[in-house]
Image (tube, rainbow, N blue to C red; front, side):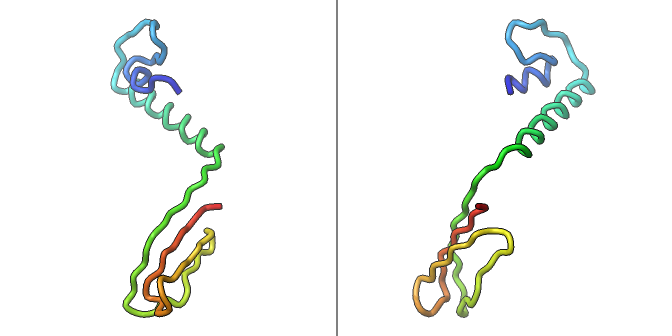
Amino acid sequence: MGDELAYINSGHQLKGTSKKKVTNEEKEDHIEDIDEAHRAYYQKQSFSWSLGMEINSSSSLERITSPTHQIDVQFKDESATQAIISIANQ
């Protein structure tokens, strides 16, 4: 994306370009430009992620589900009061 801070402060992101003073209003416009570019980029990308956690309960865990994510559950013992869970988006 280039030097975002330089773009915010001067309107230019390349070295060697002329620098001029910009107003706070122009800086805010530049920040909005960057936010819009980031949103457009991340909406096109498909990122994978996973999350691991441990759940401790005073009573037995009967079911752990998600309507939108793949979940892997491993109970530590037969009492089912402790579980190691992995959640992934794909």
